[in-house]
Amino acid sequence: MRAWSWIRAYSVAVYLFMFAPVAVVLLLAFNSSQFSGFPIEGFSLRWFRRLFENEAIMRAFETSITLGLLTSVCATTLGILASLALVRYRFPGKDWITTLLISPVLVPETVLAVGLLIFLRYLSMPRSFLLLLLGHSIIALPFVVLVVQARLVGIRRDYEEAARSLGAGPFETFLQITLPLLLPAVFAGALFAFTISFDNITATIFWRPAGVETVPTQIFGMLRNSVSPEINALGFVMIVVTVGLPLTAGGLARYFARRRQ
Amino acid sequence: MAQAREQDLRPWYLLSPALAAIALLVVVPMSFILVYSFYENIDLGLDRPAFQFGNWHELLTDSYYHVAIWKTLRLSVIVTVLAALMGYVPAYFIAFTRFHHKWLLLLLLIIPFWISFIIRTLSWIHIMGNEGVINALLLWLGVIDQPLHMMYNEFAVVVGFIHVFLPYMILNVYVSLEGIDRNLEPAARTLGCTPWQAFLEVTLPLSLPGLAAGCLLVFVLTAGSYVTPLILGGPDDFLFGNLIYDAVMSELNWPMGATLSFTLLVLLGLVVVVYSRFMRLNQLTKAFG
Image (cartoon, rainbow over all chains, first blue to last red):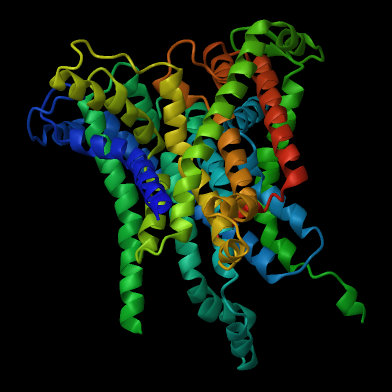
């Protein structure tokens, strides 16, 4: 199979293309040189120390994390309710409603951002943190709906019907049966919403109030001059958080699932 | 009987918060974009409600805007075609490999979605910049004695876009390859097809929905962005989105910003409509399953 080994080599090359640049950032974060690029002069943690002493970056981190958590609460709440309706009920116009729920993805983010700003301008309201929160939630909503819907389809209704026939009320059934079964979906949706908000830059640049920076817009601002070595250290921290967290969560979930069996 | 015919309102209660949010934050603002495109810009950040076609006239007659539309279209097509060429083979590999840890390959496809977009974009400065890996290596080897200039041009922008959007392509193609009946290709082979023929006449046509969905996503995402050219491009590398950014954020010309935004919305909307004539939109959602 010569063709197959070509396919394999090609795929390895593409994976390298996807990960080599990221690996370089991770590597350069520990470079002691005062310039951000090559050559590597030695191992040092000084840029991490500088990073944690940089108040602007720390404030941006705080903003991003707060915004991400609040966004994931809003988007997940709306998304779960909507997904329940889509999966559990039959009603006229369902396809149309689904398209509408997915529509924020189909609108280019730049246009979405400008549209919301113009609406706000019409209402004579200034940019605010609330705008960022609502905006991020609406951007994350379609993804939450897609992820949660995919998980919900797998939950059998028999359990709920059994609980109902054993005398549980609808609310009790939801709390005791549906919600625990739903939790992985809730968790997946919330995590997705958090990463979307934490990563967003396109719309955030338009929406942020004067003086408020999220981590991506802070990096964007810092790039105006040149790539400072602190950015590499910041990149390292961000990658460890946004990749490490879901991986650990997923790994733990698997571990516990296996132990229970 | 009467009760059975009465409509069940429960799904609408569940849907109402999400639908209200979308109406208020997406649908209404989109109509305001259209309204604002007829307003008149008087001065920096100052505009007057009006119904006039000045902004639209400027858009249709000023070649500056036409160049931007052309550039955006050209660049988006280049990125989409290259992403399809680069993405199809790995998707095929993941779908048909007998490798035991296939989940690992899939996980590695998901991980880029978790890594910050701006970090992934700027990482190319470390690869292709003057102090980047390639120049450092070539200088060290003595192949060159001056760093090569590979950054801040259209090439760097294309590479940056492909790098960020490639996982969408691979994932979509993979999903549709995965759904193909495994007996079809061997069947074609026993009927006398060469492996290449079997691929061209059986597998490729069956994977087209995924490929089309991937292409649509990459095209629309590329054509709608403005951040990548700002980070990786030079002064001449701007997309239509950059004009919107300049109009709204620098010139504070809201009516023109609205006109440009509406144009981008309609142009990309047309692409989606053409796509949905041939493919079902829900192909796009399959990759999340």
